[in-house]
Figure (cartoon, rainbow, N blue to C red):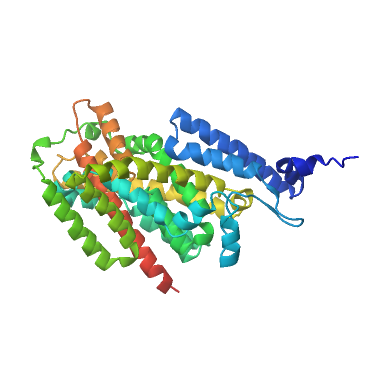
Length: 404
């Protein structure tokens, strides 16, 4: 007679009854949340490139819990906590996404790959043509990245965790990933997930913030497009290598990010078609796919149930709101400097979610005045935002270990 045990055969269901009620409820909730993220991604409400693989990973990892031994349950997808060499070699043979996590996530390599792709897609002509206004706005748009840090510390996070969640204010997912892997490895999963969830919402939420803080008559200001001189590729390549070297001298801890971004820019301007095609298509999109998938499968119930996650959720949205306000403040400063000739909406593009926030600026301006075109100015501010966010990441990574 065969001893048939339903829960031993269908272990995903069986393990639901092996854990406490809170964990079981969390697993079920995350399965449905993953499905919802896939739906929002397919509808374009959230960024589909990230949300579809993340949603699939989130739903699957919380369904695919099995008995690893008589006393341990888990999955055969990823074990982020394994560190001993012998154990790691064993896990690499079993967990199918473990090589991706170990060799691309734990050292921040995937963030650098994505930054190379972003560099290839970025036209720095407008930054080189208008460096003062672009950098002023970008610096103002780091308000959330700076102001959220002391608030997070007051809420009970340590300095590394506070700095990592503050980086959400830069609206740059790879930057948050890189910083949290170094300063808050225990919480890099929830911090990075919060970053990508909120960054995906900037396209839908920031227009309301702009309309709230900038009256229609100012949103309708037309910008002078004739003031942009022609910037040669040689000038942009020279700018890239000089800035990369200077920033690496000042902030060597963030040198991998500077190198990746500016190398991508230089490759774009040099016209090396083979590299351009590889970086902007194969490398960028494959890295984005695995980023979303790995973040999804790291979203296990036990991770999300940590009370710190609620603080991260609150602080993440606060950081993005403050950064949006700071960017618009920068836009208003330029408006007064130019005696009313600068559209303050451009300030929202200083939040470095390139090119999303630049598109937000143009969209809001076009609604107020279809003849107004601000995208070049906005792109300059957005590219500057990438640079200032990397600088702040370098500052945090360099200083936090010395703060007692």
